[in-house]
Each structure stands twice: as structure tokens, then as C-alpha cells.
Image (cartoon, rainbow, N blue to C red; front, side, top):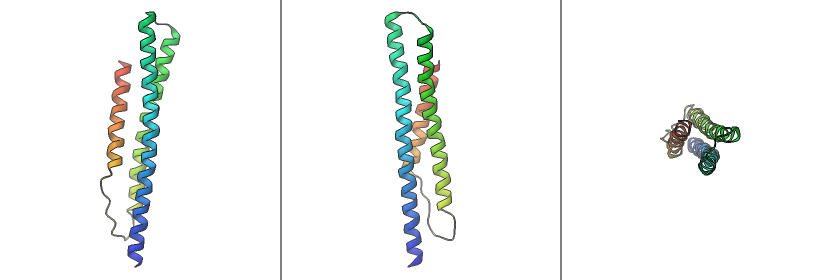
Length: 122
């Protein structure tokens, strides 16, 4: 009975780690989207006015910073998620870790964030 209880506790801990990573995905996606939105608005305003002043440059840099922060936060959250799964997997228990769909989504969003950052930068 104790072994089953321990396995269920590990599964609950794994599910909690998944929910935490999903919360970080939502937060990071919001930051990346906000930064991309700022850049799109600045580009549209620049196209209408035709001039490039310091305020436009500063706004674009702020948008890039939001994208960078969102991407970095997601990268760190994915790393912390993997560490949490390793801590859960310690011991004499028979729990077998599996590939997390949330982790795959996190990696995909990291790549999207990097592509958005590079696309805006160049």
C-alpha cells in the first residue's frame, strides 16, 4: 500500500510541475506577444509618418526587450521543469518519467520567441 501511495504522490507532484510550466508558458507568451505588438504598432506609425526618431527607436527596443524577457523566462521555466522532474524521479520508487507535452510546447514557444526576436532585430 505504501508503494502505491508514493507513486500517486509522485504523479501529483509531476502534475503540479506541469501546471506550473503551463502558467509560465502563458506568462511568457503574453510577454512575447506584447513585445511583438509594440513593434507592429511602431512599424505602422513609422510607415504613416515616414520619419525615424528616437521615440520610435526606443519603442522598438522596448518591444524587443519584452520578447527577450518572455523567451528567457520560458527557457528558464523549461529548465526548472526538467530539474523538478529529476527531483521527483529520485529514490527507490518505480515512477517512470515520460516526455511532457507541456515541455514540448515550451520548447516550441522558445523557438518562436527567438525567431520573432531575430525577425524584428534584422
